[in-house]
Image (cartoon, rainbow, N blue to C red; front, side, top):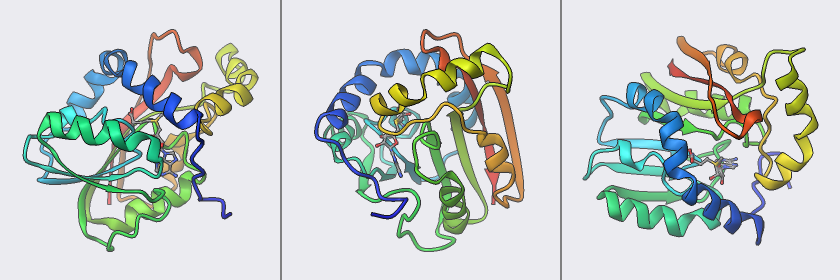
Amino acid sequence: MTLTDFRPHPVRGPVNATFFWLASGLFDRLLGPHKRRLLVDLPDTVVELGSGVGANLRYLSPGSTLIAVEPNPAMHRRLRREARRRGVVLDVRAVPAERTDLPGQSVDVVVSSLVLCTVSDPARVLAEVRRVLRPGGRFVFVEHVAAPEGTPLRRLQRWVRRPWAWCFEGCSCERDLAGALRSAGFDDVAVEAYRLRSPFLPFNPQIAGVATA
Ligand SMILES: C[S@@+](CC[C@H](N)C(=O)[O-])C[C@H]1O[C@@H](n2cnc3c(N)ncnc32)[C@H](O)[C@@H]1O
């Protein structure tokens, strides 16, 4: 197994799919204001990393196409159903975001929400995003990140590291993703940091923005 392989889990996969489906209304109340601001002027075809059960399909126009890079087969049934419900044409690719197999410079917009926390290698994913984006193309992200070092929230994120990763299939609350985005070689990175007020405390420090290739 390489570092970037995603290993589906027969129990946690379906449990996570059900959790994200049940929580989709709550997450959209929390993240919707950022998504509505950023997921605008989308082209007819959008690539999404880790689409899960389709939380972002509501932001696509009916008739548009979503290429969903989602290596977790447990997500696919609900994702397909949600795409049908929204009238979005779905092309599911069961490959990890580290190697999408998409042609270079072929995509105008790549989207990711709550995914860079879970991929094995965020730097490699960001290099892959840059590779597939056309010059001037956009990477739109909404992600949760590490709290500032030395804060109680940062300590909490460290304490829950193992059970959190176990429950959420490898998710880490300790990643400096703004730093990773700034070091990834994009032409421009516009990033806003904010704090959610959700019961999932370790998940509350967040960033959202657009990186331009
Ligand atoms: C926390 S869920 C977020 C799902 C969805 N984007 C949302 O906002 O609700 C993380 C998703 O990333 C997917 N994922 C995990 N590792 C991945 C990888 N290497 N490449 C692409 N997706 C991955 C998981 O299967 C899961 O669907």
